[in-house]
Amino acid sequence: MSRFPVAVAAALSLAFIAPASAQQPANVTIQVYSYGFLPHPIRLAAGRPVTLRFVNSSGSSHDFTATTFFANSKVTSGSAAEGEVEVGPHETKTVTLIPRAGTYHAHCSHFFHKQMGMTDEIIVS
Image 1 (cartoon, helix red, strand yellow):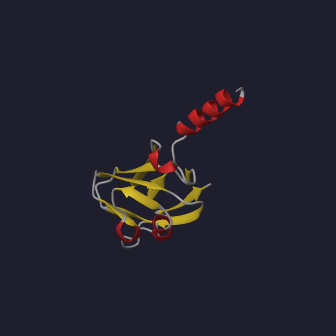
Image 2 (image 1 turned 60 degrees about the vertical axis):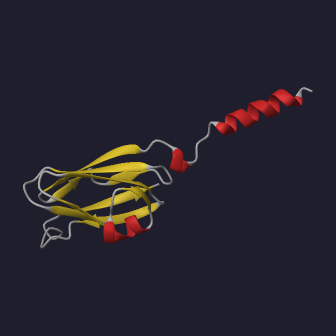
C-alpha cells in the first residue's frame, strides 16, 4: 500500500513535464543593421523552442541567410524559405523554431554586405 502514493506522485510529476514543442518559446532579438547583426554570436539552447525576432533598424533591406541552421531546425511558425529571412527597411519579422545542436554561419546575401562584415555565428548547445 505504501507504493501507491509514490506511484501517484511520480505519475503526476511526469504529467507536468511538457515536451519541447509544447514549451513556451524563449525570445531572442536579432538586431539587423548596415553592416552587422547583434548579438554576435547568437547563442541558443538545443531542442528548446525559440522565437527569433529580426529587427531591421536601417533604412535598407537586408536578409539573414543561414541555410544549414534553418534546414537543421524545426520551424513552427514564420518563414525562413530557402534558409533566409528577408527584412525590409525598419521592418520586424519573427520565426519560431526548435534548433538542433551545432555551430552555424549566417550572413546577409545582399550584394557586398557579407564582404562588408555582415556575418554572424549561431551556437546551439
